[in-house]
Amino acid sequence: MTRPQKQPRDLIEGRAALIVIDIQRSTFIDDSTQRSIPNMPGYRDRMEAAKPLIAKAHEVGIPVIFIQEIHRQDGVDFGRELDGDEDVHCLEEDPRTAVAKDEMGFARGDYMVPKRRYSAFFGTDLEILLRGLKVDTLLLVGGLTDVCVHYTFVDGHQSDYFCRVIEDCVAGSSADTHEAALRAMEYLQTGARCKAADVLAVMGQTGRV
Image (cartoon, rainbow, N blue to C red; front, top):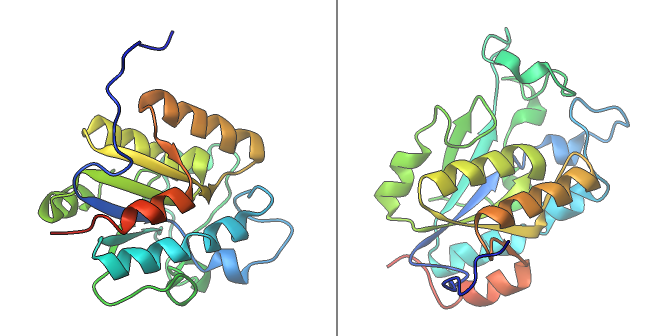
């Protein structure tokens, strides 16, 4: 049952940061039919759709934080991550692991946060960075909707950030899991699901002050 008379929230509350989750070179250079992590149809197009948001964030002074999944060559930090459907991925020194800086318009002043596990908060300095930037709202793009985006959203939610998932700029391991994850995030924060066009419109009215 939906709680009646829920307090409406703005798409961006207070100060925002754009969190670019795991948009790495593999998306643009690996066209093999068998991949270590399954991707839903249209995955690359959805990643590329985030580029105008990155450019707009640069224009209006919203911090852009690139998250990079990266694992040691000996696999010591995978933990239980390979117990499911995923094969070995995102190894150090593999050119596919690098953040897609050229493709996504990475700029001087953007931030990089490497991570060993799914959530961008788990075992990283993201929380320290967000506090230093005095961020209130997290704008999430990237992949996978049902894994790293979802778990980052949950940890952001539990840390009392306003979390917005830009649904046409994220993609999952399958269309079904993508949609299920979006519904799960909307369940946690009403209004969490939003479109790139709406975010672009609001970005022009806000920024870092």
